[in-house]
Length: 277
Ligand SMILES: Nc1ncnc2c1ncn2[C@@H]1O[C@H](COP(=O)(O)OP(=O)(O)OP(=O)(O)O)[C@@H](O)[C@H]1O
Ligand SMILES: [Mg+2]
Image (cartoon, rainbow, N blue to C red; front, side, top):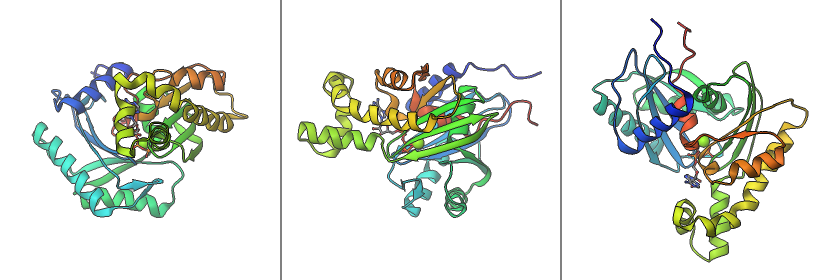
């Protein structure tokens, strides 16, 4: 019997909860592990045979810059620790993992991402483009995925579950921090905290709005000539309440942003197309 599917939004929300609380779900079927090496965060995710999230863990990190691993030792240590953390909680040992990469990076850089997994004791069973992973978690195969991360904004157009076109430009949460630090005469780390503090939201929104506008115009340029009816916003820097509206008015298209945008891509990495095997 095919395992019951979980609605994408519910699965994303539950995965975020598992990462934040350290809880685990009772798995049904084989477990699969995914690794997301981001500019600001490393996230590992575990799903079961029905693509349901069963565990996750994350750590803030600075081991990747511009889609390239810049701190090899830091990356392998962090991945190993996160892997051991979920292994302990699940009582299960992983020997393989799926690894995500920013689309369009060189073969050499892809090899480095794989080698990080190998050094952490994991054979790479799949290398997944980040927007493809996001699309899996969102339950879509076609459309535009905009990933607003810490270092960059990535815009990918997907057709049939594959990347048709992808661009990545250096505007992300990092740039919001710089703008906030300048506006309020505070240091970078204080700006990062202020940005995510719901109590300071009104002080933040106006200052970071031009950065969101810039991201939306990057997406607008990337979409020229493509007939894409629907746009999906993912990545931590799309968390602001006004982000969907800023993108929708610039793009002239409906924009969907799941409730926990930071966790969409990590959740999709170990997911499989059900009925694949
Ligand atoms: N609640 C929030 N409000 C605003 N920004 C947030 C919030 N939560 C996280 N962020 C920002 O999201 C960014 C991290 O998002 P994410 O984990 O998607 O990036 P990343 O994958 O590490 O980076 P990249 O995709 O550029 O490699 C950081 O800049 C962080 O400050
Ligand atoms: Mg990212």
